Every structure is written in structure tokens, then in C-alpha cells.
Image (cartoon, rainbow, N blue to C red; front, top):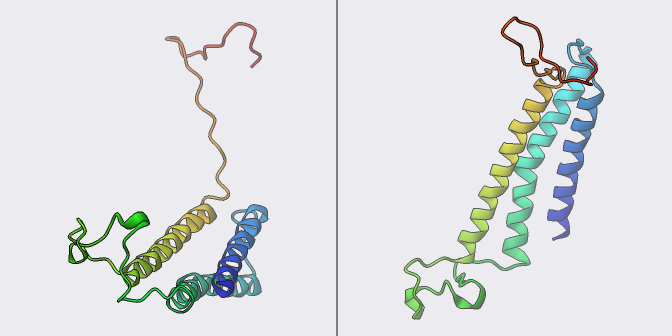
Length: 150
């Protein structure tokens, strides 16, 4: 459990560092060779960590300490998902290994969604917020309420 939690902490710390750097780096500035190499190394390491280390630590924890094997059936809280092979109502037999693998797939999905969100944030970091266009009269002048300074 400690290794899995530490892998999550390292992943969030790396992502937080990238977001903090993104907020202070002005858009449109050309990076130096060293900045580009360091940034590429950090992004590569984060992707290696999120897609390699975190799922591995989850699978190792589920296999070893939680003992989620394929011969151990997942029956849910109070036995509500007990399969028909054990006189239950559920026609699908679900083992803990299946639940373990579904959680691993969810870890990959969260990593991919985070990857897309962070690239989108990085690409849009310098765009100014567009003010809404004021409503105009039929003569083309902006309509302003009384008492509001323009």
C-alpha cells in the first residue's frame, strides 16, 4: 500500500509542478535548448510514471497484500452480487482479479484524461479572455443601463 500511495503522490507532485511552471511561463517565448530538453525529460518521466509505475504498484498491491486472486469471487457488500453457481441471482461470475484489472484500466483512463487536459491547458495558457460584446441598438450604438459607467 505504501508503494502505491507513494507512486500516486509522486505523480500528483510532478503534475502539480508542471501546472505551476505553466502558470508562470509566458506564452510565445522560445525555449532554450536546455529548457526544451529538461521539459521533455519531465514529461517523459511523468508519462512513464503514470502509465507504468502507478498501475504496476496497484497490481502488485492487489495481488500481494489484498490477495485478489481469480479463485476469490467478488460477491459485493452483503452478498448482493452472489453468482448463480453459488445459489445467488447474478448470472455473471466476477472474481477479484477482474475487479483488480478494471481498476487498472481506470487508472490508465484517468492518466489519459489528465494527459489530454494538461496538454490543452499548456496550449491555451496565453490566450486572453474575450469580453462579451455589448448589446447594440438598431443604430449600432452600445446599449448602456442608466448609472453604469462605461
